[in-house]
Image (cartoon, rainbow, N blue to C red; front, top):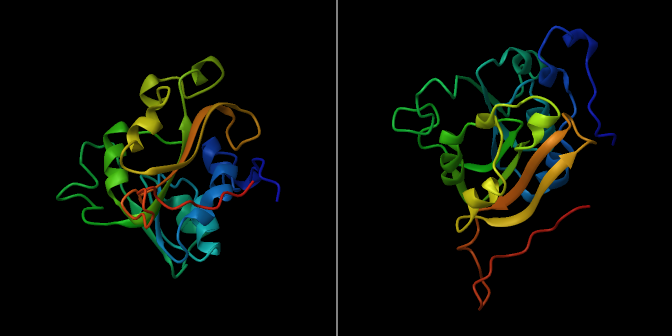
Length: 213
């Protein structure tokens, strides 16, 4: 499967990220770590490229973004898809007591090309035992090449590792300049599982997960 970015000519007037119709190679590679049939949150889902991919794999998906027009058109009527339209940066806590995601837990959370730091700890806490976080977004150094350049939207070195340390088992992590990707740039990519307390080993280490090449 060719995982380079492909643009849909009918979307020329939309933002660049909405024109990309293939899922990130990072998501393709590690989606199988998410337990089969689970409910996955596609945060800042954009046009729905990851939601559609996960639905095809048999997952139930909640897709969330402040503009869900494109995903509503592309995936209209899918039985296993729930779409939430909300602005995650309007000051309200989406996972808080009155938040739209309050009390929701997921077997998988996918975040690609999006960073809003006030949400990050809540994402970890919203994973079920055995749940999987797949995260990929831009990091510092990207400002030398392309947008985003605002440090509020760029991960610090090791920031994703710090986020999950002591909470999730790290299955995979990368940080560097990535060219063969949906939106090239300097990125951090992480896959981590909430299973540190689920070990059946005498030494307490969590179970291993298969990693595809």
